[in-house]
Amino acid sequence: MLFLNINDNENFIWTTSFEPPGPPKYKNIPFLVEITVGPAAVCTTLITIFFIWYIRTGGGPLINNVLLL
Image (cartoon, rainbow, N blue to C red; front, side, top):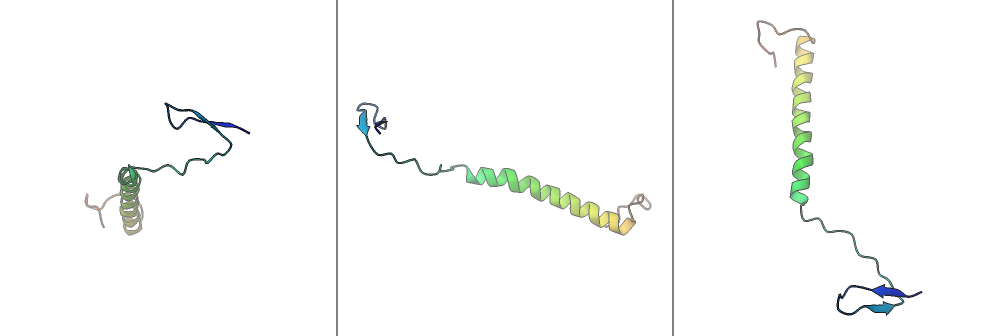
């Protein structure tokens, strides 16, 4: 089987071997971590605060307009 090697735009070469490219290299890893870890940390914090409030107050209204933590 023949493959057309088009890596060089000036010279196209017919070849019989093919090597697939390696995995993509991500240059924005800090950005990807930021947009996934940040919202997860905020949600975890809010859920923890709600859980502590619910356990301490029994889920009832605030006592004297004070959030009991």
